[in-house]
Image: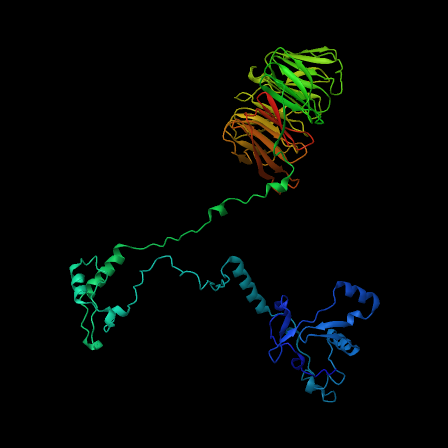
Length: 590
């Protein structure tokens, strides 16, 4: 191999500095000196490479020279040249790096030029340069010296419309044509009839402001008689009618609508009506799932409580009370159902579920409630009618709401293991209590009034936070994480509160056309459902992340139409099913 050979003479493909990657989708690599296409040299595939690696230890020497379209095998001489170049050494044994130096010459000819050593000050930084640099640095720090801004070259598209300045210039005059020439063609000249018709017309209705004339030479053309008048009208028009550029904004209306993900990617969620639980003869006021999802309890206006098998819709057991049942709530740990009927709260166990006998305990005296134990069941009598009951996550405590009680005694907290009842606060803000909920993890208790959501610490018995911005909430619930609160209001809005972020709503969803009746959050799936008097059920995907820097993902998934306005909706504890109380029936959506 000769090192002095010119590499340009060996190159077969003549494409200049064009990247070879431009020919990746073509069947050839370029053109030679004769203008003919140079076909690609196909290398081995991955399987052939693997076989050659195992059979030939020197497989790595075979390469493809794309510029010459041929296969090359690296020889030992080529490897030696490559190693020499990588070591930054001259290529070739005949090269002498010291040929320009004469080692036999006197010292002063190739050295410093003299035997006297340079002074010390030549190796030290200059004192005056240091002072000057200090002054410049101080001026930059004070802002006296500012860096010149580099003017970027304006790039514009030649093929777009004409770029207009801020102030619109006068419109350009139309360029003269053949009819305005001093020697126009014969077809542009008027006949006698056309001349008479042009003269009879009003000047405002004439197609041409002048009559075409023909002159044999330009020197014979007389002065234009209306030149002064036209220039005056032109200037008057520019002065009286100033022009302003009004840029036209061309926006596609669909681009302003946020692009939501496809709801099909967030399955499973309730989509259609699967079955109806029929058997009640009066309007159903409340429903609740058993803690494992096997049973469903319901209570109606006639005081009938029914226990259903959740998967088949079969009525397993039924009982009757003297007053209408306003609320039913299963204990989240034990097979105990709390039933609100009139002034009483009944804690009852059914045979279809695991029979459970509540242990008897001596009740403590309380002026708010009276406890009675009989045959493993408990009956609690309050001073006014009970409208709502909710359980704590551990199953020992539950709270009751008496809307007709005095302001400070509307909410009573009961202990099942101690048979105790007491109110959690002595004072209450203005406005009646509308709903309440326990925090799933912390000892916090949420009470919704007409204008606020109050947060109480049950251990410290203090008001720790107040959420604002809502109007007459109907029902509140907490997300399974406990850091978010959902409130369904009478003003057709669903409010989403972040406990640690702000006291005002984080998100507002005005999707319902009429008053909301209930809001429910699933315990396992990131699902939220709302019901309203507009005969609809709205399903949302609500994903809450553990990373506080990432915002929750809330996407509307489906709107389910109902025959009757649902009063309550409830998710199955384990399955993505939704049950709703619609009149005398319970509808199950899956």
